[in-house]
Structure formats: C-alpha cells, structure tokens
Image (cartoon, rainbow, N blue to C red):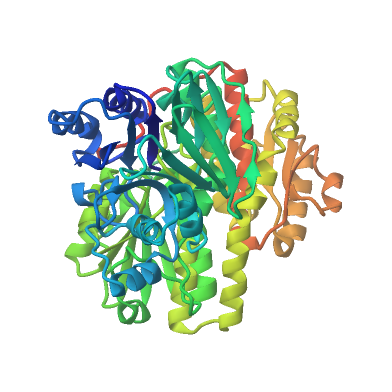
Length: 613
Ligand code: F6R
C-alpha cells in the first residue's frame, strides 16, 4: 500500500517530507517522489530504486528550490503500472502546476482517461491515479478553487482513495480527501500535516485528526477546514495518540501480526477492487493471458508452499466447481522432482505471497520448460515469480511483516476465487446471473471478516480455557480441510505446540489412535452440506475424551451438543467460508502464542521468505 505525507507552513518542507518518507519505508514500497509548490511554480522529483528509493530521491533533490512551504511526498507500492520512475507519484496535470499523490485504486480510470485524452489531455504514466490530476485540472480551468475542484472531481470516480493535491496557482494550500484508504491530518503551531500513517508525522504534529470516508480537507498553515462530498462542512474526529515510533509503525497494535490480522477486511477489499467491467465481465488488468488461451485451458496445476499452498487447495474446489476444469495442487518443492506431465492446455499457477520462494519459482520454471503457460498469483509487484510468469494477478494485501502469513491467505483465496469465476464466465459453465451473485457475495466477505474479527474476546476465552494443552488436531471437510490445515499451521508455528490438520473423514484411518483425554480437536463445521458428517466425526473423538472446539456459524444450534467450545462466525457461501473461518483460528493461535510468551512476529527457526531449497 502506498504511503502519503503532506506539509504546509514550514520553511524546511523538503527535509520534513524526506524524513517522513523514510518513516514510511517499513510498509514496503518500490518508488518514491515529492512535489513542492511556491508562488507560480510546482517542482517535482521521483526515484524508483526499490527499497532504496527514498535515498535515491534525496539525491534527486539536490537542486530543489529552497523556501517552498507546501509539499507532498509519496512511497508507491505498484498496482497499475510497473515500479518505474514515470509511474511514481506525484503526478502532474498538463500545465505542470497541479500535483497529486494517491493511495488506492480508481476503478473507472480507463473510461475517464479515454474521455480526458479525447479532450486533449496528455498522460505521462500508465497509472490509474493520473486521471485525478487531469480531472482537477479541468475543474480548475472551469474556475473552481482547489478544494471545490477536488470535490467535484471525486464525484466522477469509483474506487478507493487517499488523495492529496497542491497547485502552484493557489500556494500555501493542500487539499486532501479519503474513501476507504486511510488518511490522517496533524497540526502544530503554524503548520498542517497529512499522512496515510501516523509514523510519517508522529514527531512533527501535536494534534491528530481522522479523515473519514468521503471527506475533503483544505489545509493551510493556520489549520484546516473539512467538507463532505456534497460540500457541507464537517468536523474531523480528534485522535488520542501517545505512541512511540515502534507502536506507531504497528498502527497502535501490540505487534505486526495483530495489525495484519486486523487489516484483512482492507486486504480483501483492495484485492477485489477494479476487477469488474461495466459489461459484467470479471477482468484482471494486469493479467496478460488472452481470453482465448483461458478458454482453451484443459487442466490447472497450482504450485505453492505453506500458507499459499492452503489457499491453492481452497482454489481447487472453486475452480472445479465453477469452471469445471480439473485441478491439481502440488507442494512446490515436490512438483519438479516428480517428472510432471504437462500437456497442451495445462495452466500452471504459482501462488506466493513474496513471489520469491525458491521452491515455487523452480516449480514454475520447470512447468514452463515443459511447455505450460504460467500464471503467478503474488503480493509483490515485479517479484521474481511475477517477472518470470507469462501472466500475473496481484493480491493487494500490502506488506506482510510478521513471518506467519495471515492477510496474504485471505487475499490469495479471494484472488484465486475471482479467477475461478472469470474462468467460469469464459467457459460458460454457469449462468451469468449466478456468476454475478457469487461476485457480489465475494464483495461482502470483507464485512463478514470484520464481524469475525470483532469476536476476539470470545476466542480469548477459549484460548484461556485450553491453556496448557499440548496436542491439537484440526479437522475439516471440503474447503474446511485446507482451513483446518492453515489453522494447524498457525498454531504450530506461533506456539511450537503439536498441531496437525486432517480431513475429518480420514481420522478413523489411523490418527484416532492418538485421541485421548487432554488432546484438543478443533473442527471447522460451517458448511451445511458437511455438517452431519462432521458431527459424527466429532462424536467419535469426544467419546475418546478429547476436548472439542468447533468453528460454527451463528445460526448453528445443533453444534452445542458435541462441542465443548464454539467459535462463532457469520455464515457465508461455503466456498468463501475459508476467508471467514480462518479468523478465529488465527486469533486462537495468536492469543495462545502471546500467553506462552512467544515472539509472534518472529517465530524461532523461520524466515519470511524462503530462498533456499
Ligand atoms: C506460514 C508462512 C509460510 C509461507 C510459505 C510460502 O505462515 O508464512 O508457510 O506461506 O513460506 O511463502 P510465499 O507465499 O511467500 O511463497
């Protein structure tokens, strides 16, 4: 996710921006830029040097004008367009006077761009964001002041934005606005600030305010005024922030893992934004495989490791159900050593949060060598996997710092299920209205995840009650099985306790011998079609003395008969359920690990990115 900083009213504006951008580097980024405005002039510098971009930007700023009091800075995490300097923010309008920085995605950028190009505007990047600079330019030409121009321009856009704008013809002013993507305002005597995240301005601002959805704020040295999108005045909510830098980087959470667990609704929304055309077709701008090629797919092979493999296993059920293509899922470290069969029409999908896991890269290389088309599903733009694949779909979960993967999992499931729906559309394996209903259902999962997250205290109670247990079996059927695998992986890597995931029906073929008093069985039982069978599996383990924890939907009244503890979740379409059902399991692992005094962000023996075979 991009980082934003703005300042108006200081004489050392550039240095304030560069320091603020350094403090945003921890969020991950691939390029950076600043714009300064003084009377009649806007000056801009940008650099794309990966994680060295702020240092490279500083070098670009040696000739910056001095004494300009208004400025914007941006760290970019690429979504539309490669991580190159020309796509880095700030973006300028045709006159070079208006500069904008943007975090989010403008869903209808293509149609707006076409219209603006038709009216003579010249675009210099391939980003969705640049349309905002030209829309504001049009409104300014029509005589609107800067805040009015921003407000009316935003009435034309769909999508998510934290936006900040300056214009040299109206110096000492920044106008900012927000929908979905976070934005805060800060003040100190004679200076106003804005930022996407507290660390950027923590040591500068004295008082902090939250900008809410669809609010526009005009900042000057003397303070700010806020409006809603209809132009009516609004008051911003003051925030009480007494954090040190470390707490601020974690967004006020105890650790990165808690922050990333909480970010899952946003990760889902960002991943699903801008994937639906006006004609109803699901589309992935960045993908790069033609519809004809997708129609011709005869077999899909998903290769991935760890959590990404569990997301891939969920996707298998969705692709087979909706698109009627046969799907295999392989552990990426196994794939290349088993002399895999690649026939004409084989699509191999490499799934990797980092895009740098060597096992997954090697598996996709092997598949390519044997003639497969390769699609990468990854969170990191221009990662090795993305570069080497024929096509790519980006999850937009933002940087994951905690070693154990959380938000990447839900974003991967969402992206892969969206891909499954696209495949179904192209192969006409489902009525269009069913695809549309599923697409809408997928959009609603973010809110269901939010509800599941709000039940942390209920999960904490169960974690407290089971504190001291050492053996855990996680069971599930259908997509509940990969959810169980993922729940078990979270528990073992965070707590170092013994946890295994099993298909619930497989238990009686061996592992049942291990069930005895003291063992905990955690079952995922949210799918009505699997419910009865899971219940009878649980009766078997309960009869042998295990403690039984069940993830069950809010309306499930029969579960209390077999469960010692119930973790309630909102019901959803069964194929979407892994994204919701994993929430209490992540929280359970997290809370147990904290109670055990583990370092949840950095479990022993593990690395975030595994680049050795
Ligand atoms: C588990 C975890 C790992 C990764 C695995 C693959 O919490 O984080 O199992 O999922 O190392 O990593 P990526 O997705 O980067 O290929």
